[in-house]
Image (cartoon, rainbow, N blue to C red; front, side):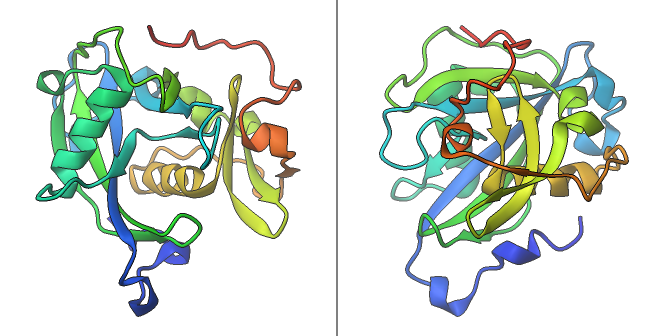
Length: 221
């Protein structure tokens, strides 16, 4: 893969940041082989996200990849898998970790994050997840994220990022930038109007905008 998120480069000034990891878990319902290099049609591929609890003090209501801070002695892969199970109920035995793809810095939260990739041909999950952290898990068709009408550069005050509109809100910020990077690297990106922009209200940034249409993705659980 190419250089990872140049706008989130890890620099010397970030040395004291907390280490964290997220999991981009893709799944295919028809038994595709467990390797992202061999994934076929993105039209038949889903991605797992979470909508954070609106009661959290940091990033309430935002849509993100499952993940969190590393516990003592954990590797980023171990942390990403553990956090995914805790936040979505997905069983680690039902997916394969493909690998980690480098480190990126998130100055706004003081984290250095390692994105980890996973693939599953048959997801197994429980209906239990950490509801103090996650309002609900989401299983989102990649085709909906790639749909040009759902893409824009989003703006919030002086911040800009890639954005993907879902019925439950906008995927933006670090998660939006990371997904845009992954889709480009996988060769999945569908041409879209890169001049299209959307100024987020704070309600939209937190996934609570009244303008978001009724959900077409039923929340998991």
